[in-house]
Length: 507
Image 1 (cartoon, one colour):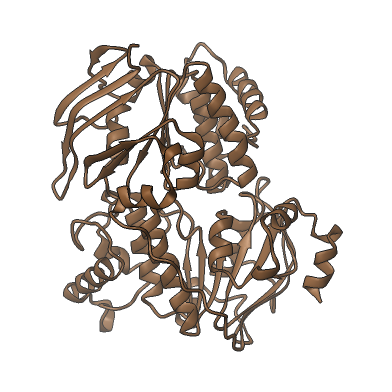
Image 2: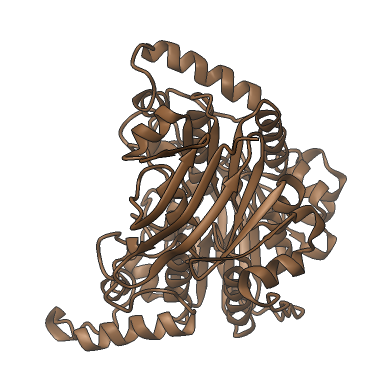
């Protein structure tokens, strides 16, 4: 059988790290092939080489048995290679349909593309409004646009980089049905994910990378999560210690928060009420695009329209307070978007600490660059961030390592209230365990935490109480020990008012 894709001795050196070191990979037609490795192992660089976005320093790429030079992504698409990036490549000011249209044959009109998006999205269960501007979409909704854009090209090889990181369990199952059908039709799939259960359930073959080198090839269906973890990081991730919460006073109180839409595509918040106490983690579950962005913006102070008295911190009305003032009062925030909001891509890690920290800023606004670099180095060491030092640009880090740095920056500030959106999105099992352990340690030290995540397993693992957001409404709280995946899944459809448990939870 002629291989669909073959890589022979691929190497790529960056100034601070050798991302790929003599990597060989073989993918058969119709095969779903996982590429597994911890953050910074070289997976994304390898995928960009296949897609023509990065040129290798050495090695050969063979496509359907013939050696090829893939000069750029357009050449890759011409061959039949399509890729969905972990960090999306969409123009914020254009609509979803216009973004998709840019990458397709211009013989198709925009109206044709809009119609095909609706057809493909309906077929694969991906909820997309093609006429919405991208800047109004959540991370999960943007990912759906990227996936549909790739499917519209009818690829021979589809590269998926963390495709389920912001999808619900139901949407993941739907996507798996789609991927299996594509594979049955002869499409090869390269699948990058840190979710070991998914790889074992979906993939036919698995190549493991560590430190830029291939360390093993296995049939994931014959492996356990523990054995895959050992191949990937050399050990099993440490088990979390989740002690019973010892809650204190109410730190954050949200009462009857109503917030109208600020544009035609946003979600209105309706009667949102909940409390978060010192020494507990409250998790918010929900399908992407149901008001999470709007709630995070108003709690962080980015949206200044909160009605007076609707948001209180330690009993004080902070509805009119700016993000900077809220930080001074002890409220720190980790946004879901790493690049562009959590960090400035072109700035160094040292300078990115100054986005939310004042250490190193002296009288009159003078910077002590030595202190700033020392703080960044401290974060790199404490949170085991793989980077070329404090001077490394944020965009040079892998997604998982940048996430560790951003979350670590806010944890290290010793907040009284920490609000985190998608804390371990695209992060490997070892790094995810580290971040979750740090969140639990912060809770045990008396901090109040509000965690928004579309990873239900994560919420069940770290949360003391759970809320669900649906269509701008927030459910009653439910103790995690009394919750189940099925019940939370029902509530994610907004059905808690019809659930007998809702009355008990609200009591």
